[in-house]
Length: 300
Image 1: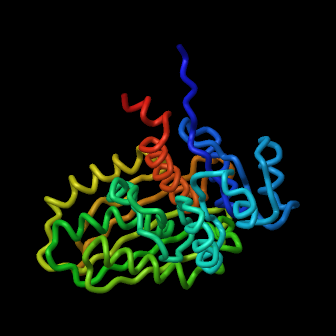
Image 2 (image 1 turned 180 degrees about the horizontal axis):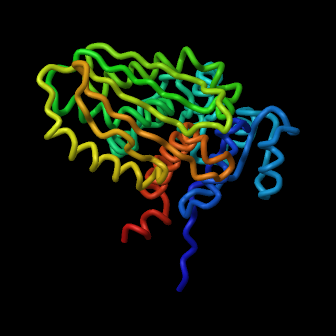
């Protein structure tokens, strides 16, 4: 006898670049079913894309979920840090699992390659920032191989055209959240995050460089760990590449990575948006595998 296996119903809040790219990614997922795409402007490019894909839309934002709590089990919040702080009490009351795409620092910070399983026990999962997703796995192993990390600086350069209105509004939160996450995961005493919006044409791919001031550098132990981590990340972010393996210069360890997007909704150069969306989908799929019949069948 055939058994019908249900996917996890998800809603996306925010019809901008991140939300729309998320929509395309969730639609091809074997574990997720996007049942609502909600924003504020029915005439936006994201809404037009959702209509073309046959997805239910709403211009009521989070109120669309409040009015129909059964429409979804999990919510991607792709709005802004300020908006998420307003959305969370409403979604928490409805017992929704929330994957926060904003740098609000409300939920548990999640870097799938490092702490995904732990985060599945939380109701609010925060995807930190694009720069955080790119740099923290590298910084983590610098911290693991060096007992005293005095200072870590992360510099991310992204194409200006890939930074939408919400990204620009969230710059201060981006810096604070990225720095907080670096100190937490890498056990660094101090951290600094810099985001460069590069207006060059043609648009540049995302590049992130990690600078770490340490005592007694141990590159022999660090390099194979970094290479293994890059392979792990590539399982959910195919465009993640190691450009400069760990080197020691000017009394600091330097590592550089590049991220190219999958080109689902956004151009390939928008790796900054792709990496955080791929990380969010990986988290949502892991949650779905653990809580739906599709996931249980796959694990059987």
